Image (cartoon, rainbow, N blue to C red; front, side, top):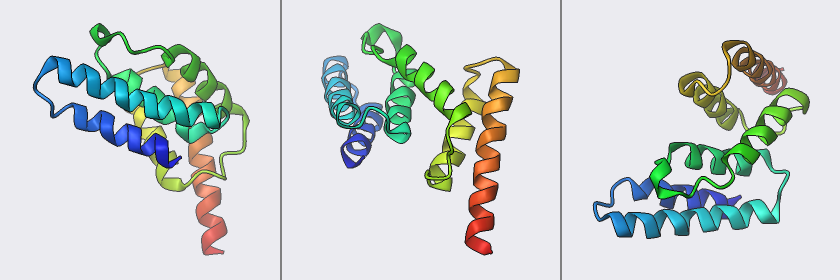
Length: 130
């Protein structure tokens, strides 16, 4: 998980690089770290989301969006079917915001994902307050 966040941080830093060649080199290094984290834990929803979010925002002309479809399918399936209570409420909130803002699925599918996340956040908050 730490390796994935290190890669995500490096990917975000890429936005500040002016030189196109260095930008490409840096995003490839960042994705290499994230891919290594995914390989070590293929079923980790948080790691897969980080890679998906980074690839979603990378311009297509960089040609590094190799896992976007695969991760998108994985996330969609798992966000609707598994118990999300193991995830931190902060990451759940961020995932919900990501899906709300980026118009990835139809309104109906997005609504289903957001409802599942809301239920998980609410039950997590009830468990910690009760």
